[in-house]
Length: 125
Image 1 (cartoon, rainbow, N blue to C red):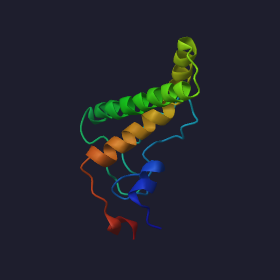
Image 2 (image 1 turned 45 degrees about the horizontal axis):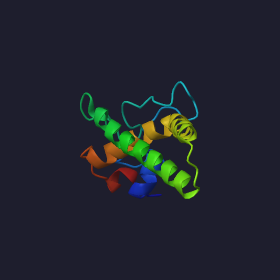
Image 3 (image 1 turned 60 degrees about the vertical axis):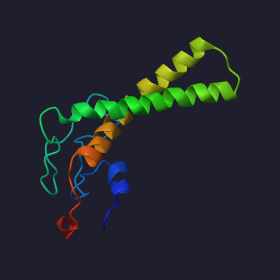
């Protein structure tokens, strides 16, 4: 079955074959959520394109965090809750709780968008 690019991103799959897993463990393992496989188990693509490649993913993660902050403050404004301490605690709790998700998806998106890797359908046959 051939995956679309969006399905590959959501399921954290290789951008070239869309089959192999990018991460060694699932995101529910607190001490191991950040372990990226060195190569794709299906096509052999090296995920870290060059030394320090994933450093750029922190900009994607930053964008995720800004979106959370804006969404929480807009929601609290709509609900007419003017408690700054509550706002800060809520934002920090959400951001800390979503660290594994943001970490993984920032790397996946960065590799898919900026990794200069083209999808090769022939690898799935």
